[in-house]
Amino acid sequence: MNTQSTRLDDLMLNDRGFVFDPNTGESYQLSATGLQCLRALQRGATTAAVLAELLETREVDALTARADLDAFLWELNQLGWL
Amino acid sequence: MSKQPYIVPAIRRVSQSSANPQRLGRTPVIDVIDGVPVAGLLARFGGPLFVFSEAGLRAKIRDAKRAFAAVYPDVTFAWSYKTNYLDAVCRVFHQEGSMAEVVSGFEYEKARANGVPGARIIFNGPYKTTAELRRAVDEGAMIQVDNRDEVVALARLAAEMDRDLKVGMRVHVDTGTHAVWSKFGFSVEGGEALRMIRWMTENTRLRVCGLHCHVGTFMLDAGAYATAARAVTELALEAEEAGCPPVSYLNLGGGFASRARLHGQYLPPEQATPSFDDYARELSGTIKDCWPQGRTLPKLYLETGRALVDEAGYLLASVVAVKQRTVKDAGAALAAYGKGGAGGALAAYGKGGSVVAAVGGRRNAVVLDAGIQILYTTAWYQPSIYPAAEPRTGVQPTTVYGCLCMNIDVIREEAALPDLRPGDAVVIHPVGAYNITQSMQFISYRPAVVMVGTDGHAHLIRRRETLEDVRGPEVVPGFLSEINGTAGEARVDRQ
Ligand SMILES: Cc1ncc(COP(=O)(O)O)c(C=O)c1O
Image (cartoon, each protein chain N blue to C red):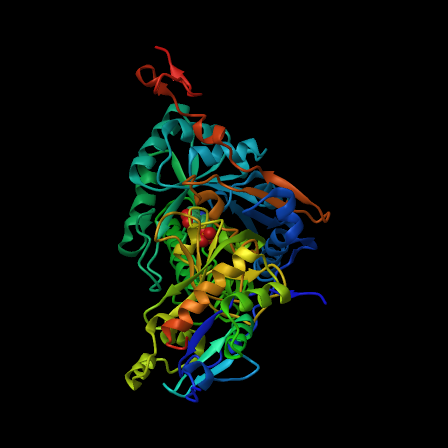
């Protein structure tokens, strides 16, 4: 079993969407949905599951949510978190 | 369980200076204009949509008249047509007792078509044709002569009619506040204006009975009017001393600032814009000071434009797309909000690790269905942009793009706005001055204009442009009558 924590696990989040990345010392601000998505990802949710959660909890159509989520995941990827 | 509103999942790097962008403060919402819901206006008339408040227009002109009446015995306002010549807007001012101030034959015709008699028109401007001058003379308009060629043309008319003609003379004055508007009229400094008045008296049947000086526009320094008023009052007295007929009126033009915010203006308009009382005090105090004791004060005319109409005008527009835009230094942008200390915020990148500029340097951006082709004043002002409904989030710096396929079409480089989605309406304000008259038919149709009346109803005062409005004046030469074997719907010149 791999016991090493990932960059994603290391992130420290608070309820207001503030994120601290201990690996770089940088801080970030998430929108409310950004926080929701990042938390889901930390729990190990797949992209499909995150999308499903957005659609279940928010007033949004599937295509818009999909487009926005993909852009968001791309940014997290850029940060080396995924 | 009901669902929560949707906002875009987004992440933004927090630099030292930006702190929590949610703390930039709240933007007030404009969801009704004089009691009429913005959403209803857009549903009924479509968007984008200009909206004018009748109550707002009347309140301004009444406040201006009150301020001047309190300190000066004889003041008349003339509505500056070029500032906004929508008939409905002009008629509100005419109902409030304003004359018409026009600067071309076209504007003169528009004022006459509004039922304004010639004698209630002030005819300004550097270009008046002889035919236009003849009509203005016949109808008794107040002509403010701008240049020597116009003096000559008017002198010929007077000779032809074998009568004396009363005219006003436009002059320019160095107020020390900005570059002198020397394009217009004769120079007071150096004596050009005085010489010309004498020349007219001695050589023509033109009688200079008024002096006109419009110092400039958006004068944030009310003191400039004291300088101008002193110069024209002294000129009037000098001319009389030199044997010319007495000057019975002074026209100090327009130029009072509206509550808009200029680019680079540090103080908010609430602090920077002088009140009508401030301007009135400067003008009245100076004229009374310079005028001989015991003699009836000259009549005062004012041609205030933007200060009377700007804030009564709103543009309702809708978000059509939401973007993230890459900015070089997001920290610097935030510093503009007074959060301070942004310089070198991005030096933090030197820490190593995988901080990505692309994420840190992102700013929200929205594209609206209206652009700078109908918002000429964005060249001068930073209009406020308000959400038309309760915001879903706190505000953050947002670039507001217009709808044109032109890179310069930026309505605000950086406005404090909450998260917006396509379809969300925003209200841009103030936009009542010059945008209607200077808007272009470019790329899209010019929008409809409504006036929210004091009767509580919205009235259409200009319908949206149609294809026929644009193509109407066009004629296609016969040799272009067919393309690919079809004639289309062009109006073909059959000669
Ligand atoms: C002769 C004259 N009068 C009045 C005005 C109205 O000016 P404002 O809108 O600055 O009050 C102008 C505008 O340029 C003008 O040229």
